[in-house]
Each structure stands twice: as C-alpha cells, then as structure tokens.
Image (tube, rainbow, N blue to C red):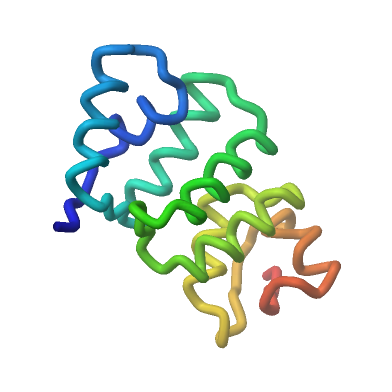
Length: 130
C-alpha cells in the first residue's frame, strides 16, 4: 500500500537525529511505499536548509537519492528532477519547482535572479524578467 508521508518522516531519514523516530520510519517503509507530495518536497528543502543548515549540494543529493528508491514515489518526479538540476545551478528551490511545473509556458517574474544560471545555460524553460 502507498501512504502519504509528512515532512518530519523524511527529515528523520535524511538526518537520523532521533534514533527512535528513524527506526519507526524504517519499519513503516518496510510495510508501505511512501508518497511525497510537492508541498512536502518544498518543506523538506526548507527544513534541511534553514533548520539543519545543510548545503545545497547535500540537499540536491538527498532528493536525487529519494528519486532512486523504488519504495519512495515523489509527486511529479520529472518536474522534481528538473528542479533539482536548476537548484544545483543556484536557483532557489521553490523558484525551480515553480518553473518546472510549467515547462511549456514562458514564465514571467520581477525577480532578476529567477533560475538565472539554468535559463542562461539553456537548460530551463524561458523566463521573462519584467
């Protein structure tokens, strides 16, 4: 059975900072596949960056690892893969998720740094800065 999980379960997997909770998450993962929604994905990055002070490359590597696990399903996996790529290039994670959600549209923003390197390198959809 696939179950939806909250951010705090995935953070226990990432940080293993509470052994009791970590073991509970592992036991749950043995019984079920995990579904990670886009909103939880956004919060995972925010918690790892702001609370745990994890560097961008470590956060990106953790998301990549999640995508490789057969028992973990992420909402809109292709969008997440793109967002991780752009995030590694310096984009804000939420901005990268916004852009990944509309690959066939021109994205308009006032933010001059919006996914700047990814757009400049031609690996992201078009962004128009107003």
